[in-house]
Image (cartoon, rainbow, N blue to C red):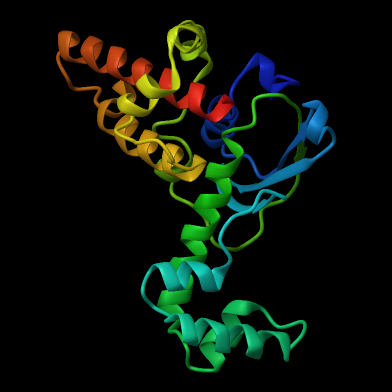
Length: 233
């Protein structure tokens, strides 16, 4: 399988889609090219086309922070967990949480899954990077469902429409399209786009009537244009 060598020629959604359909195992590496972050590397590990691990310097919530947000840990419990973790160097955060009785295995597993999805989400704002794929044998471990890293993602076939729309947008209109207000963070933008896009993406509604699919395509392009404008600005 031959992949495009740069994200300017495709989108991360297209790359992951091709790897998913081919059921390959290996590491997809993105090396950023924007001057301010040139050389930064991000690695997506796949097993039989499914995402199992993401290595990225992008800031995503730590495991304890995810558990606080989910209501599993209180702020005081989180502080206690950080103290406990610092006193046990080399141990995995999840093992410390379960071993100390602060969280159940199922709660930690759900939080790790959510953290993995957030790491994938963080990479979709990258639009200038060289692409490398290193094939290797499959390994065991946690995987994301295809809907977590494919559905509602921008595709190359939509890029020209999105760019045209972006050129005509202002920040206020882009926020309004995604149901957001001034002060929304990049994470707010990603989450809102993902929710709205999943509701209208034509690939998720293949049984819809042609007129309905055409309407959904227009709405999806509108959401995509707003998303790309806000991420770029």
